[in-house]
Image (cartoon, rainbow, N blue to C red; front, side):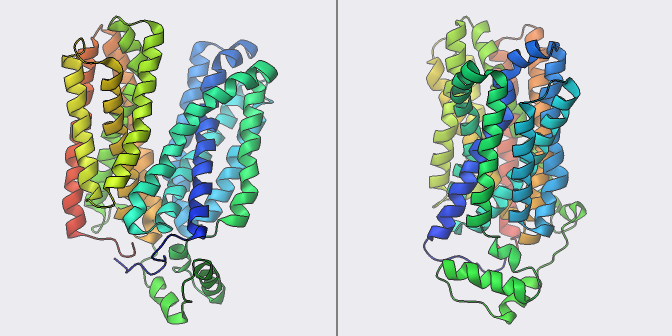
Length: 437
C-alpha cells in the first residue's frame, strides 16, 4: 500500500466541496431512478400500457444499472473519475429530461435504460472519488453518508413528485428531475477536480501541474517529477481479468459473494415488507409505515457504522452488522406478535442497511487506484443479480402462502452468510493490502 501523501491532516474546504457535490449527485440519482415508480400508474394510463409492460420498464432500468456498473464504471480507471462522472451526469440528465416528452413505449424503454447506464456507472465512480479525497480515519463515515444520499433521494422524491404531478402531470416529474441533474454539470465542472491519486498515475508535465494545483488548494506542498514517477510505477492495468488474477482473486470473489447475499435480503425486504405485514394481519397504512421504519433505519445504521469505523475495523463492523441483521430478522419472525412492529423493522434496517453501505467502503479499500472503479463497479453490478433473485424468490414463497415468519427466517440466511464472508475479508486485509490507499 502506497503511503497516503495526497491528503492534508485536516479536511480542507476543497474536500468538503467534493463530498457535498457527490452527495447532491447521489440524491438526484435516487430521484431520477425512482421517478418511474412515482409516475408508473399515470404513464400506464396515458401510453395504454399493460402492467407487464410497465414491469419491463422497471427491469430495463435495473439492467442498465447493472451494465453501467460492469462495463462503463471501469472507464473511470482509464480516463479519470471526474471525466466519467461528467459524462454520466449529462447522460442521466438528458435521458430523464427527454422521458418527460415521450409518447411511445420503445422510446420510454430506451431512455430508462440510458438513465440506468449512467447511474450504474456513476455510483462506482463517485465511491472511488470520495474514497480518494477522504482521510482513512473518516473514509467509512463519509462514503456511507454519500452512498446514503441515493436512498434519501428516492425517499424525498416521493414528496416532491406529488405536487409536481398535481400541477404538471407525470411529464413534469421527469422534466424537473432531469433539469435538476443537468444543473449539477456546471457545479461539477467548476468545483470538483480530478482525484490526485488518479492523476499521479498519469505522465507528463500537465499531470504534475494539475496535481500541484489541487495540492495547493489543500495547502499541501508541491510534488516533484520524482514523486509523480513513483505514482506511475503503480500497476496501471485495469482489466476485469486482473480482478481474478492471483493477487486479487480471493478478495474479489468474496466481495462479489458478500454483495450478492446482501442484495438478496435487502431487495426482498424492500419489495415485500408491506405485503408481508398485511398478511400478518395489519392494515394497509400500517404496512406502508412499516416499510418506512425499515428504510429509516438505514440512515441511522449508516451513521452509526461510519462513526464506529473511525475507531474499529471496518470489515469487522460490517460483518457484525450483517450477522446482527440476520439475528434480528429471526427474532422478529419468531416473536412477531410480541415484539413492536416498527421498532423491530427499524432495527433490521439499522443493521442490514448499515452493513450493506459499509461494503461500499470496504470495496474501495480492497483495490489500488488504477483498479478501484473497476473493482467497485463489478462488485455492485454482479451483486445486483441478488436484487433480482431476492424479490423473485420472495414472490414465489408468498404465492405459496408462506407466512412472514417463514419468509424472514429464509431470508435471514443470506444476511448471516454475508456476515461470514465479510468476516473473511477481515483476514484478507491482514494478509494483503492495496498498493496506494
